[in-house]
Amino acid sequence: MLVLSGYDDAVQGGEGRKAHSLVFIHMLMVVCAFLVSTSFTVGKAITAGLDPAILTLIRFGLATTFLFPYVKIYHGLRFSWSLLLRCSLISLSLVAFFYCMFLALRYTSALNTSVIFTLVPSIAGFYAMVLVREKFTEGKVIALFCGMAGAIWVIFRGDINALLTTQWNRGDLIFLGGCFAMGLYTPLVRLLTRKEPMVVMTFWILVTGSAWLFMLSGSRLTTLEWGAIAPSIWTGVAYLAMFTTVITFFLTQYCVAYIGPTRVMAYSYLYPTLVLLMDVALGKGLPDVRVLPGVLVVLVAMFVLQFSAAKK
Image (cartoon, rainbow, N blue to C red; front, side, top):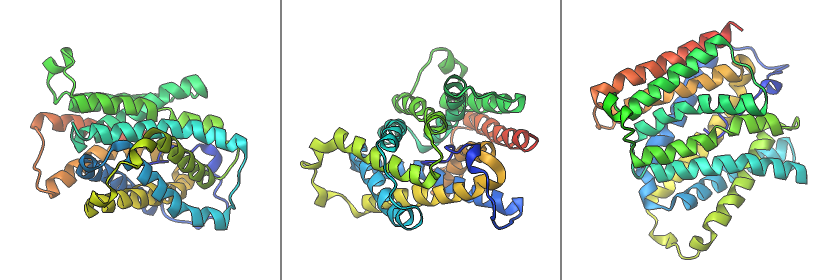
């Protein structure tokens, strides 16, 4: 989830890479989307047991530890004040997003957050037009509009009266604020990257993000009863750090060289459907039938964005 849409065309060189069929690459992206979508369900399960800032700090710290050997061996620990400042600005958007995510999950559902997250490409697109002068194709605009419309439909449960009277769930509002912060991530990466390998940027983003979170939650670290934290919470945080941060990074880095950043980003529209299927598998049943059309519209947006990008 951390870097799912944070790549630009500069990382698409891919010289010397081993040839794979597009079917195989898209299968990898489905796996990646599934792993990312589990973060909403896992986050929902563990957020009540730990302060959101501390939970995010542990996640970032573990992900940094997991990435450290790879970065050290293959790239060395590159450092400059310029790199530190740029990564600090980028990580600030992530810290705000993940803090809002875990806080919001105390008041809203995993399905709602996964659907609201589909607003991020549209928000990021607006920021990109301002910060990096990105131009949108007609197909991409249609897909982003469909994704936004589907998300709004689910947020309001298909209730037009709720839409007109803006009856927002508290958690939905918190997470929407986080999504506005997350929307800055991709444009900032494109604006502030200086030809460093993305894995190096990601490592220092995690390091500086951990520093932001330490400043945010430092006073609470000494008063927290660490021994009282349930093993299930530790397991959940470790899962988020390894599977939904580090492994999804490598899957995305590999696939973006074949299908490009736009088509990789399109897989974020799969999250609501995957979360919905996970809820059914966990015995939570189907949501209100009025929600389903919105989920279907978001799914259509994914395919439109895929095909419009493929024809470029």
